[in-house]
Length: 375
Image 1 (spheres, rainbow, N blue to C red):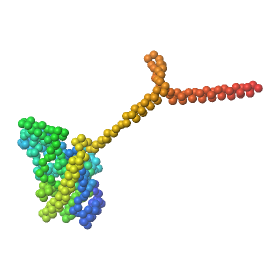
Image 2: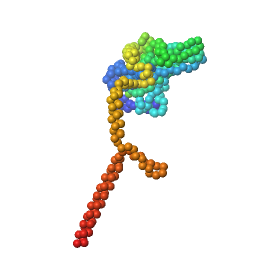
Image 3: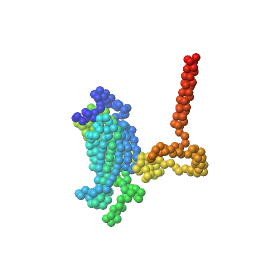
Image 4: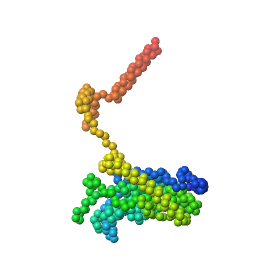
Protein backbone atom coordinates (compact mmCIF):
# COMPACT_ATOMS: atom_id res chain seq x y z
CA UNK A 1 0.00 0.00 0.00
CA UNK A 2 0.96 3.62 -0.47
CA UNK A 3 1.11 4.23 3.29
CA UNK A 4 3.51 1.34 3.83
CA UNK A 5 5.75 2.48 0.97
CA UNK A 6 5.93 5.97 2.44
CA UNK A 7 6.69 4.67 5.95
CA UNK A 8 9.33 2.21 4.67
CA UNK A 9 12.95 3.30 5.06
CA UNK A 10 14.55 0.14 3.69
CA UNK A 11 15.97 0.24 0.16
CA UNK A 12 16.03 -2.69 -2.29
CA UNK A 13 19.69 -3.40 -1.60
CA UNK A 14 19.08 -3.34 2.15
CA UNK A 15 16.17 -5.76 1.71
CA UNK A 16 18.27 -8.20 -0.28
CA UNK A 17 21.14 -8.01 2.20
CA UNK A 18 18.83 -8.44 5.21
CA UNK A 19 17.06 -11.46 3.70
CA UNK A 20 20.34 -13.10 2.81
CA UNK A 21 21.65 -12.57 6.36
CA UNK A 22 18.47 -14.05 7.86
CA UNK A 23 18.72 -17.11 5.64
CA UNK A 24 22.19 -17.64 7.07
CA UNK A 25 20.84 -17.25 10.62
CA UNK A 26 22.35 -13.82 11.17
CA UNK A 27 20.86 -10.44 12.14
CA UNK A 28 22.22 -6.98 11.52
CA UNK A 29 22.44 -6.19 15.25
CA UNK A 30 24.33 -9.46 15.98
CA UNK A 31 21.39 -10.99 17.87
CA UNK A 32 20.11 -14.52 17.65
CA UNK A 33 16.81 -15.07 15.85
CA UNK A 34 14.93 -15.59 19.14
CA UNK A 35 16.87 -13.06 21.20
CA UNK A 36 15.27 -9.96 22.70
CA UNK A 37 16.91 -6.55 22.68
CA UNK A 38 17.96 -4.90 25.92
CA UNK A 39 14.98 -3.57 27.89
CA UNK A 40 14.89 -0.67 30.32
CA UNK A 41 12.09 0.65 32.52
CA UNK A 42 12.07 3.86 34.57
CA UNK A 43 9.54 5.89 36.56
CA UNK A 44 9.04 9.61 37.09
CA UNK A 45 8.27 11.67 40.15
CA UNK A 46 4.54 11.60 39.49
CA UNK A 47 2.58 8.40 40.06
CA UNK A 48 1.48 6.75 36.82
CA UNK A 49 4.47 8.00 34.83
CA UNK A 50 6.61 5.27 33.21
CA UNK A 51 9.06 5.12 30.33
CA UNK A 52 9.98 1.85 28.61
CA UNK A 53 12.81 1.27 26.19
CA UNK A 54 13.46 -1.77 23.99
CA UNK A 55 16.64 -1.25 22.03
CA UNK A 56 16.26 2.16 20.41
CA UNK A 57 12.46 2.16 20.67
CA UNK A 58 11.12 4.32 23.51
CA UNK A 59 7.59 4.81 24.79
CA UNK A 60 6.29 7.11 27.53
CA UNK A 61 3.03 6.29 29.34
CA UNK A 62 1.02 8.60 31.58
CA UNK A 63 -2.11 7.56 33.49
CA UNK A 64 -4.72 10.06 34.70
CA UNK A 65 -8.25 9.82 36.08
CA UNK A 66 -11.36 11.96 36.44
CA UNK A 67 -14.77 11.54 38.07
CA UNK A 68 -17.52 11.37 35.44
CA UNK A 69 -21.06 10.10 35.04
CA UNK A 70 -21.31 6.35 34.27
CA UNK A 71 -22.82 4.65 31.26
CA UNK A 72 -26.59 4.17 31.85
CA UNK A 73 -26.30 0.55 30.67
CA UNK A 74 -23.49 -0.16 33.16
CA UNK A 75 -24.01 2.15 36.16
CA UNK A 76 -21.47 0.35 38.39
CA UNK A 77 -18.53 0.22 35.97
CA UNK A 78 -15.89 2.83 35.29
CA UNK A 79 -14.14 3.67 32.04
CA UNK A 80 -10.72 2.65 30.71
CA UNK A 81 -9.48 4.53 27.68
CA UNK A 82 -6.24 3.98 25.79
CA UNK A 83 -4.63 6.44 23.41
CA UNK A 84 -1.34 6.07 21.52
CA UNK A 85 0.37 8.95 19.75
CA UNK A 86 3.40 8.54 17.51
CA UNK A 87 5.51 11.66 17.86
CA UNK A 88 6.90 13.34 14.74
CA UNK A 89 10.30 13.34 16.46
CA UNK A 90 10.30 9.54 16.65
CA UNK A 91 10.87 9.05 12.94
CA UNK A 92 11.42 11.23 9.85
CA UNK A 93 8.63 9.29 8.12
CA UNK A 94 5.94 10.64 10.49
CA UNK A 95 4.38 13.85 9.20
CA UNK A 96 3.95 16.78 11.54
CA UNK A 97 0.34 17.62 12.42
CA UNK A 98 -1.13 14.42 10.98
CA UNK A 99 -2.28 11.32 12.80
CA UNK A 100 0.07 8.44 12.05
CA UNK A 101 -1.62 5.22 10.84
CA UNK A 102 0.29 3.34 13.52
CA UNK A 103 -1.43 5.34 16.28
CA UNK A 104 -4.88 3.91 15.52
CA UNK A 105 -3.57 0.37 15.19
CA UNK A 106 -1.59 0.54 18.44
CA UNK A 107 -4.56 1.99 20.34
CA UNK A 108 -6.79 -0.86 19.23
CA UNK A 109 -4.18 -3.47 20.13
CA UNK A 110 -3.74 -1.95 23.59
CA UNK A 111 -7.48 -2.20 24.15
CA UNK A 112 -7.41 -5.84 23.06
CA UNK A 113 -4.51 -6.64 25.39
CA UNK A 114 -5.97 -5.02 28.51
CA UNK A 115 -9.71 -4.61 28.06
CA UNK A 116 -10.58 -7.86 26.32
CA UNK A 117 -8.47 -9.88 28.76
CA UNK A 118 -10.13 -8.03 31.71
CA UNK A 119 -6.77 -7.23 33.23
CA UNK A 120 -8.27 -4.33 35.22
CA UNK A 121 -11.38 -4.39 37.37
CA UNK A 122 -13.75 -1.73 36.06
CA UNK A 123 -16.27 -2.23 38.88
CA UNK A 124 -13.69 -1.08 41.41
CA UNK A 125 -13.76 2.31 39.65
CA UNK A 126 -17.32 2.97 40.82
CA UNK A 127 -17.74 5.84 43.30
CA UNK A 128 -21.53 6.04 43.63
CA UNK A 129 -23.58 3.63 41.54
CA UNK A 130 -25.42 5.43 38.77
CA UNK A 131 -23.93 8.83 39.64
CA UNK A 132 -20.14 8.96 39.61
CA UNK A 133 -17.39 6.61 38.43
CA UNK A 134 -13.70 6.97 37.68
CA UNK A 135 -12.62 7.44 34.07
CA UNK A 136 -9.02 6.22 33.74
CA UNK A 137 -7.08 7.37 30.70
CA UNK A 138 -3.80 5.81 29.56
CA UNK A 139 -1.81 8.00 27.15
CA UNK A 140 1.20 6.42 25.44
CA UNK A 141 3.63 8.56 23.45
CA UNK A 142 6.11 6.91 21.09
CA UNK A 143 9.31 8.93 21.47
CA UNK A 144 11.66 6.86 19.29
CA UNK A 145 10.75 4.03 16.97
CA UNK A 146 13.02 1.28 15.79
CA UNK A 147 10.50 -1.51 15.39
CA UNK A 148 8.31 -3.50 17.81
CA UNK A 149 6.29 -0.51 18.99
CA UNK A 150 3.52 -2.63 20.50
CA UNK A 151 5.70 -4.51 23.00
CA UNK A 152 7.27 -1.24 24.18
CA UNK A 153 3.88 0.47 24.45
CA UNK A 154 2.36 -2.45 26.40
CA UNK A 155 5.30 -2.53 28.82
CA UNK A 156 5.13 1.24 29.46
CA UNK A 157 1.33 1.22 29.82
CA UNK A 158 1.28 -1.72 32.24
CA UNK A 159 4.04 -0.26 34.41
CA UNK A 160 2.25 3.11 34.51
CA UNK A 161 -1.08 1.47 35.44
CA UNK A 162 0.50 -0.51 38.29
CA UNK A 163 2.34 2.50 39.70
CA UNK A 164 -0.67 4.83 39.36
CA UNK A 165 -2.63 5.90 42.46
CA UNK A 166 -6.09 7.43 42.33
CA UNK A 167 -7.47 9.76 45.04
CA UNK A 168 -9.16 8.17 48.04
CA UNK A 169 -12.95 8.50 48.19
CA UNK A 170 -15.02 8.38 51.37
CA UNK A 171 -18.77 7.79 51.07
CA UNK A 172 -21.10 8.76 53.91
CA UNK A 173 -24.70 8.04 53.05
CA UNK A 174 -25.25 9.51 49.60
CA UNK A 175 -22.41 12.00 49.90
CA UNK A 176 -19.00 11.12 48.37
CA UNK A 177 -15.88 13.11 49.19
CA UNK A 178 -12.75 12.94 47.04
CA UNK A 179 -9.72 13.57 49.26
CA UNK A 180 -6.55 15.26 48.10
CA UNK A 181 -3.11 13.69 48.35
CA UNK A 182 -2.39 15.74 51.48
CA UNK A 183 -5.56 14.57 53.22
CA UNK A 184 -5.32 10.82 52.55
CA UNK A 185 -3.02 8.32 50.89
CA UNK A 186 -4.06 7.54 47.30
CA UNK A 187 -5.34 4.10 46.28
CA UNK A 188 -3.84 1.83 43.57
CA UNK A 189 -5.94 0.40 40.76
CA UNK A 190 -7.18 -3.19 41.01
CA UNK A 191 -5.18 -5.27 38.52
CA UNK A 192 -6.26 -8.91 38.13
CA UNK A 193 -3.28 -9.99 36.02
CA UNK A 194 -0.42 -8.44 34.08
CA UNK A 195 -0.45 -9.23 30.35
CA UNK A 196 2.68 -8.63 28.29
CA UNK A 197 3.05 -9.01 24.54
CA UNK A 198 5.71 -10.44 22.24
CA UNK A 199 5.91 -9.77 18.49
CA UNK A 200 7.22 -12.26 15.92
CA UNK A 201 8.17 -11.53 12.30
CA UNK A 202 8.20 -14.14 9.52
CA UNK A 203 10.29 -14.35 6.37
CA UNK A 204 10.71 -16.73 3.43
CA UNK A 205 7.08 -17.89 3.49
CA UNK A 206 7.13 -18.49 7.24
CA UNK A 207 10.28 -20.62 7.31
CA UNK A 208 12.28 -17.99 9.24
CA UNK A 209 10.92 -16.67 12.55
CA UNK A 210 12.38 -13.63 14.29
CA UNK A 211 11.64 -12.29 17.79
CA UNK A 212 11.48 -8.56 18.50
CA UNK A 213 11.91 -7.28 14.92
CA UNK A 214 13.59 -3.95 14.20
CA UNK A 215 12.16 -1.32 11.85
CA UNK A 216 14.04 -2.66 8.80
CA UNK A 217 13.01 -6.22 9.62
CA UNK A 218 9.37 -5.16 9.88
CA UNK A 219 9.57 -3.54 6.44
CA UNK A 220 10.92 -6.73 4.88
CA UNK A 221 8.75 -9.17 6.88
CA UNK A 222 5.96 -11.05 5.12
CA UNK A 223 3.82 -11.17 8.25
CA UNK A 224 3.75 -10.69 12.02
CA UNK A 225 2.26 -12.51 14.97
CA UNK A 226 1.46 -10.79 18.28
CA UNK A 227 1.04 -12.99 21.38
CA UNK A 228 0.14 -11.64 24.81
CA UNK A 229 0.49 -13.81 27.90
CA UNK A 230 0.36 -13.17 31.65
CA UNK A 231 2.33 -14.61 34.55
CA UNK A 232 -0.11 -17.52 34.85
CA UNK A 233 0.79 -18.71 31.33
CA UNK A 234 -2.68 -17.72 30.12
CA UNK A 235 -3.12 -16.59 26.53
CA UNK A 236 -4.53 -13.06 26.45
CA UNK A 237 -4.13 -12.14 22.77
CA UNK A 238 -3.27 -13.91 19.51
CA UNK A 239 -3.28 -11.75 16.42
CA UNK A 240 -1.71 -12.44 13.01
CA UNK A 241 -0.92 -9.74 10.48
CA UNK A 242 0.12 -10.19 6.87
CA UNK A 243 -0.39 -12.85 4.22
CA UNK A 244 2.00 -15.45 5.61
CA UNK A 245 0.51 -18.88 6.38
CA UNK A 246 1.42 -20.54 9.67
CA UNK A 247 0.95 -24.10 10.86
CA UNK A 248 -0.31 -25.16 14.28
CA UNK A 249 3.17 -26.30 15.27
CA UNK A 250 4.62 -22.89 14.47
CA UNK A 251 1.95 -21.14 16.53
CA UNK A 252 2.48 -23.49 19.49
CA UNK A 253 6.22 -22.93 19.33
CA UNK A 254 5.70 -19.18 19.25
CA UNK A 255 3.40 -19.39 22.30
CA UNK A 256 6.07 -21.28 24.24
CA UNK A 257 8.71 -18.70 23.32
CA UNK A 258 6.33 -15.87 24.25
CA UNK A 259 5.61 -17.44 27.65
CA UNK A 260 9.32 -17.60 28.43
CA UNK A 261 10.19 -14.12 27.15
CA UNK A 262 7.20 -12.45 28.82
CA UNK A 263 8.11 -14.08 32.13
CA UNK A 264 11.57 -12.51 31.89
CA UNK A 265 10.03 -9.12 31.11
CA UNK A 266 7.64 -9.49 34.07
CA UNK A 267 10.61 -10.08 36.40
CA UNK A 268 12.32 -6.96 35.04
CA UNK A 269 9.17 -4.92 35.60
CA UNK A 270 8.68 -6.27 39.12
CA UNK A 271 12.28 -5.39 40.02
CA UNK A 272 11.83 -1.86 38.65
CA UNK A 273 8.58 -1.43 40.60
CA UNK A 274 10.22 -2.57 43.83
CA UNK A 275 13.12 -0.18 43.34
CA UNK A 276 10.72 2.68 42.67
CA UNK A 277 8.68 1.79 45.77
CA UNK A 278 11.84 1.66 47.91
CA UNK A 279 12.99 5.03 46.55
CA UNK A 280 9.64 6.65 47.36
CA UNK A 281 9.66 5.08 50.81
CA UNK A 282 13.07 6.60 51.52
CA UNK A 283 11.73 9.99 50.52
CA UNK A 284 13.42 10.38 47.14
CA UNK A 285 10.01 11.25 45.70
CA UNK A 286 7.90 13.22 48.17
CA UNK A 287 4.41 14.67 47.92
CA UNK A 288 5.86 18.08 47.24
CA UNK A 289 7.63 16.67 44.18
CA UNK A 290 4.51 15.22 42.54
CA UNK A 291 4.19 18.18 40.20
CA UNK A 292 7.92 18.55 39.57
CA UNK A 293 10.28 16.14 37.89
CA UNK A 294 13.22 17.33 39.95
CA UNK A 295 13.53 19.51 43.03
CA UNK A 296 16.38 21.09 44.96
CA UNK A 297 16.48 22.76 48.35
CA UNK A 298 19.39 24.67 49.87
CA UNK A 299 19.82 24.17 53.62
CA UNK A 300 19.54 27.20 55.87
CA UNK A 301 22.82 28.79 57.04
CA UNK A 302 23.53 31.18 59.95
CA UNK A 303 24.57 34.74 59.07
CA UNK A 304 27.18 36.65 61.14
CA UNK A 305 25.21 39.82 61.85
CA UNK A 306 28.03 41.83 63.57
CA UNK A 307 30.18 41.43 60.47
CA UNK A 308 27.32 42.60 58.27
CA UNK A 309 26.69 45.64 60.48
CA UNK A 310 30.40 46.53 60.45
CA UNK A 311 30.44 46.32 56.65
CA UNK A 312 27.35 48.55 56.51
CA UNK A 313 29.05 51.16 58.73
CA UNK A 314 32.08 51.25 56.41
CA UNK A 315 29.83 51.79 53.42
CA UNK A 316 28.00 54.61 55.22
CA UNK A 317 31.29 56.34 56.14
CA UNK A 318 32.47 56.14 52.53
CA UNK A 319 29.26 57.69 51.34
CA UNK A 320 29.60 60.55 53.89
CA UNK A 321 33.07 61.47 52.54
CA UNK A 322 31.80 61.76 48.98
CA UNK A 323 30.49 65.16 47.84
CA UNK A 324 26.79 65.63 48.25
CA UNK A 325 24.19 66.03 45.60
CA UNK A 326 23.86 69.31 43.76
CA UNK A 327 20.81 70.59 41.94
CA UNK A 328 21.30 73.03 39.10
CA UNK A 329 18.25 74.79 37.69
CA UNK A 330 18.33 74.85 33.88
CA UNK A 331 15.15 76.77 33.33
CA UNK A 332 11.56 77.18 34.45
CA UNK A 333 10.22 73.77 35.44
CA UNK A 334 13.53 71.91 34.78
CA UNK A 335 16.49 70.92 36.95
CA UNK A 336 19.63 68.73 36.80
CA UNK A 337 20.87 66.61 39.68
CA UNK A 338 24.63 66.20 40.16
CA UNK A 339 26.23 63.91 42.72
CA UNK A 340 29.99 63.92 43.11
CA UNK A 341 32.31 64.31 40.13
CA UNK A 342 31.62 63.05 36.67
CA UNK A 343 34.21 61.30 34.59
CA UNK A 344 32.81 63.01 31.50
CA UNK A 345 33.38 66.42 33.10
CA UNK A 346 37.04 65.67 33.88
CA UNK A 347 37.64 64.40 30.35
CA UNK A 348 36.09 67.55 28.88
CA UNK A 349 38.26 69.79 31.08
CA UNK A 350 41.44 67.97 30.09
CA UNK A 351 40.50 68.19 26.44
CA UNK A 352 39.74 71.94 26.67
CA UNK A 353 43.01 72.66 28.50
CA UNK A 354 45.01 70.79 25.87
CA UNK A 355 43.30 72.81 23.12
CA UNK A 356 44.15 76.10 24.90
CA UNK A 357 47.82 75.15 25.25
CA UNK A 358 48.01 74.27 21.56
CA UNK A 359 46.44 77.59 20.58
CA UNK A 360 48.92 79.59 22.72
CA UNK A 361 51.87 77.72 21.19
CA UNK A 362 50.57 78.43 17.69
CA UNK A 363 50.18 82.15 18.54
CA UNK A 364 53.77 82.33 19.84
CA UNK A 365 55.08 80.71 16.67
CA UNK A 366 53.17 83.18 14.50
CA UNK A 367 54.58 86.14 16.46
CA UNK A 368 58.16 84.87 16.07
CA UNK A 369 57.60 84.36 12.39
CA UNK A 370 56.20 87.88 11.94
CA UNK A 371 59.21 89.40 13.75
CA UNK A 372 61.59 87.45 11.56
CA UNK A 373 59.84 88.63 8.40
CA UNK A 374 59.88 92.25 9.63
CA UNK A 375 63.64 92.16 10.25
